[in-house]
Image (cartoon, helix red, strand yellow):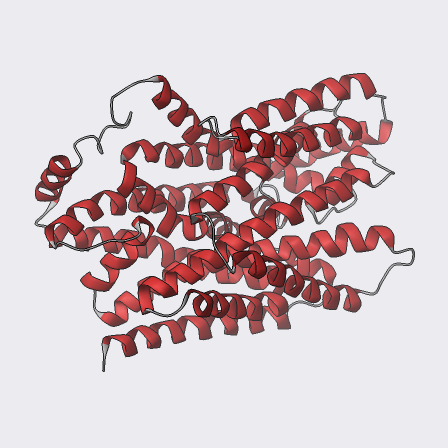
Length: 496
């Protein structure tokens, strides 16, 4: 068989497995809560791998290795920031959010939690949250489609549009019908494929260039500053801004709806501890492998005189030239796994924003569970079509698209999530002001292009605005006070 045939067989197996999991999940999805949150019955290990896989997207396989290949270990500060942020997210947010969303009127989405937690009878907070989700996730989903198009273009010589369309159709197939459970179960398989791929490829590349010593010498001779974590020229003001920007990525975790919704779906708050251990182990290994792939790619390209047009395809190129075509095909499937796992999770969150947080708010009579599930599937399709329209002509890198959407969510939702969980005096007006100021700062700061990642100033401004406005608008509410106390008691009981 030809090399291309092996590659297509591997991809065919992967696509078939994803659709089969979607069918399996669809048969176990009976009502709206099942479709949106898996009935709050997600085991810790499923939540951990699902959160990791839906977090990393094509950025792990393409964006990060490409950035390290081009600029060196200074780009590794992003990985450090993400690891710290993920650990704190599991530690601070996961158990308390799982408990609080159950106590506060069984909230099944982030916007509905904000409304219930802060007793916002105007619905303005819920609607504003939903609009922010739809705006930034449409951009985020578009980045997944761009990654899918680039993947097929570089790996199979197909057209960008064909690759983008194929990834979109298959992801839609299992997401529309499998819902949250389908997205989570496929994430588990995809997460395992990802971690195996980012370990295998750099190891084989190191062997191919003659070992660790030879690889290090080649990299040092070609790019002497690539091993310097402070970048070219050492510690300068630009370096400090770069490091601060990289570490600031970790702040984004607290506000990512597609990640924290996994915490809400856990079987119990106590499961967060197990989930944290599994999730952080997966993340450290995956990020280390991606950084290593970017570095060793320099040596591999130089040794074999390869013309690498796009740094973001360095890991794809090494997998195709180093491995048996069938294994290379499975590695390429892992790239699709990275893209599709995030893609599917974000579609579900967008669907929940449209159905749970917009449609149910404006409709006077409660719709049936069956009609909500059907409407949820239609909304998944609509969001995908809009994102596809934006991705038809890509005008940014995968990392660029992801970083902007990540900053948007991190600044708009991150401070509000933390304050709502740990500060009794947060008000609905404080939350709304903080959310809007965070999202607006991301757009404004990005426009001025200061070099500092927009998430950091936006997160700080959103927090300050939320606190100041809450101080002026706070009025004691006995129901809010009681829920805050009940959440703490639920966590104490869960530890016993």
